[in-house]
Image (cartoon, rainbow, N blue to C red; front, side):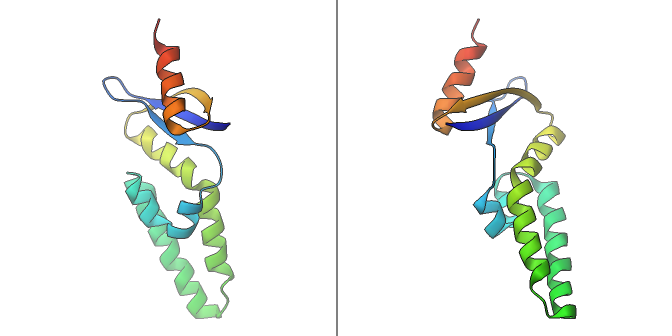
Length: 113
């Protein structure tokens, strides 16, 4: 089972964000965040990536880049949740299901009186 957090906004379809490490965020970083609609975190991560590249040029070590990749993977989905909060979404119920569609169905089924 996969765990999702739900984010609700009146008049909008609920948004589900998967829990756990994100390989997409780790590999693509700020581009992945922008694709998820997380503009503010995406620009902040871009600034961090530029600083890491500058640190690699100054020290010759790739450790700052590896650190940025790991941090992006661990916190990428949390940054998407933060961005949803900035957009006016409120956290809802956590949902466990085998897929995104199954989780959305469970969430909508639980919300019906």
